[in-house]
Structure formats: structure tokens, C-alpha cells
Image 1 (cartoon, helix red, strand yellow):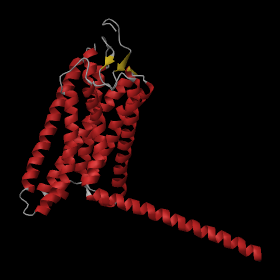
Image 2 (cartoon, rainbow, N blue to C red; image 1 turned 90 degrees about the horizontal axis):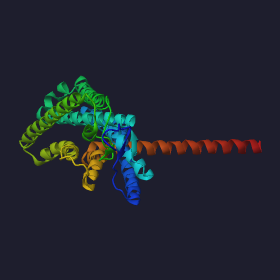
Image 3 (cartoon, helix red, strand yellow; image 1 turned 90 degrees about the vertical axis):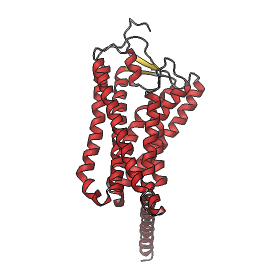
Amino acid sequence: MTNGIAVTGFIFMGISDVQELQTLCGVFFLVMYMAALISNLIIITLISLDLQLQTPMYFFLKNLSLLDVFFVSVTIPNLVVNSLTHNNFISIPACAVQVFLLSSFSAGEVFILTAMSYDRYVAICSPLHYDAIMNATTFVVLVGVSWATGVFFGTMYIAGIFSGPFCGSNVIPQFFCDVPSLLRISCSERLLLIYTGLGIGLFLGMCCFTCVVISYFYIFSTVLKIPTTKGQSKAFATCVPHLTVFTVFIATACFVYLKPPSIVPSITDRLFAVLYTLLPPALNPLIYSLRNNDVKCALRRLQQNLCARYSLHLILQNICQWYSVSHATSKLFS
């Protein structure tokens, strides 16, 4: 497409140009997507139903899982459909929705992870004041700010990028609509708004990263002062899952957005883009369930309750059947 023709839609590069490989990737990503979706929904269900998980830490974890469900559902289902149908076209309105949702949920996830690091800092460094500091108002405000900040950045990006026409090539060197690729072909007169938003986002992202680093500096300093090895292990066990999740999310995001731009990205670049949207949501429930005894105990309690209800249902069903047979027999001989 030449530079003088306006863009009416976009074409993704996809994972591969070989149709058989595209189909195989589509099936694989579908399986991974379903695993991430189901595992995060299990975490949300456990925290919502189990009274012993009604604490600020698990309230943040539930919101993180909810964000993961939305985040992975923005791009992966579209990638699966494109891979299986071999159609990589997306309209401008659909692309705008994708940019808004992806920006909102990714920004919200960064702030939720930052709030979780503050929660761990207060729990370990100021345990006697934890209930006073992390009260219901505090963690509701932190979560509300996280969601609102994500919506703010999503609105700012689509207002700047999609307020004007696009010109140049309509090929996006990704499998989803990302802001850097769209900026290269945007003819909008509001690019100042976009770059202002990117600047604010980078500044707030660095602030979040700094807050997490400072929090864990004080956390590790406090934990190392605990005299017993058992106490240290117990304290580290509550922090390692969050630190692992934060590292995976930031590392994949940095590789996707901070690497030097390329007109024709390699297969490695495209795979890391998939990992950025799929790996954190898939790993988060696994990390928290494997490293967290409270979550594993809650899962066992849920299984026992379900089994008990199922057994009770079978018993009542057998009683009803026995009563029906007895009643019919008594009528027969009466």
C-alpha cells in the first residue's frame, strides 16, 4: 500500500507464513489459553467462597487473576481464530478496542502488582500495624486506583491514535494491535497526546518498579534479621510468588516494548510477544497454588465440600427411590 492511500484496516504478520504451522500454533495457543482461563477462574472462585482467604493479600490476588482473565482474552482468542482460519485482517474499530483493553489491563496489572508489594512490605516490616494500615478502605482504594489508571491510559491512547487517518503500510508486525506499530503509520494530529501519555506511562511504570524494589529491599532486610530459619522460610514463602510473577511480567513486557524497533520482526520477537500476553496469566495461578499452602488448603476444602454435597445428593436420591419402591409395593399388596 502506498503512502497516499488511507488505511481502512490492518493485517497482522502472525506467527508463521506456513499454514500448517499456523494451524498447529493455533491449537497449541488454544490449549494454553483454556488452561490460563480455567486456572485463574479457579483462583477467583476459591478466594470468593473460602472465608479464610478474605484478607487484603488474597483480595489483591483475586483482582490480579481477574485482570489476567481479561488480559489474556484480548489477544489470544483472536490469534487462535486467525491461525485456524488463516485470516490476519482486523478492522480499525476492532483494533481500537484491542488497544484500549490491552493498555487498560496491562497498566492495571502493573499497579495491582505494586499494591501487592506494598501489602507484603506492611505485613512483614510492620506486622503489628498491618490491620490498621491495610484496612478495607485502603485496599479498595488501591484496587480502584489500579483499575482507573488502566482505563485512563487506554482512553488516552485510542483518543490520540485513532482520532486521525492512517497512512503507509497497513501491515502490523505483530499478532495484535500494539501502540508502537500504530504510531509508525498514524497521520493523526494528536500525536503529542500519545507521546505525553507514553511519557506519563513510562514515568509511572518506573515509579512502580522503584516502589517494588524499595519494598523488597526492606522486606529482605527484615527477613534476614529473623533468628530462626523456619521463620525466614515462612516469610520468604509469602513473597517469592509475587516477586516471581512481577519479574516474569516486567521481563516479557520490556522485551516486547523496549527492544529496538524492526520492520520485519524475527520469529523470536513474535514468540516473545505471545509470551508477554500468555505466559504471565498462565503462570500466576500455578505459582501461587504451588507455593501457597492457604490456596492448596482452600482447594482441598472446596473439593471436600463438593464431594460431600454430591454424596448427600446420592443418599437423598437413594432414599427417595427406596421410598417410592416401598410405597408402590405396599399398594400392590394392600
